[in-house]
Image: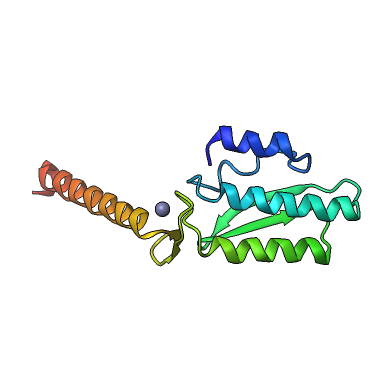
Amino acid sequence: MSPELEKKLTNRFPFYTGELIRYGFPGDGWFQLLWDLSEDVEECLDRDPIEDFEVVQVKEKFGTLRYYVSHGRDDIYACIRRAEARSAKTCEECGEPGKTRPGGWILTLCDRCHEEREEERRQSWEEYKELQSKDPTKT
Ligand SMILES: [Zn+2]
């Protein structure tokens, strides 16, 4: 996720205390999902505050959102589970409806982003083969 979007989240919601998101998210597609989840969590805390509550880590794993909090509670876990389910159907690059794609690194992508990723993979494979064929130590 871009630093600008991360800042928007961390400025708005006090329970983001560190640089949590940047390294776990290649794309911006889950920003709205995270924003909605943050509002839900905030609502839970407004209803029934938890002292020193913070979000410890936010990342993508096996194509779905992982969201770790310092103090758990059933209502907050329920919000997190809903957001995790939503992430499995949301393109992590652009936010369009997507699905989880198998591969070396499992991602949730829409058809268009999936096609782009496949194309990039084909290209870098071609470049790799080209380099190999030019390598004098290989002949
Ligand atoms: Zn997409």
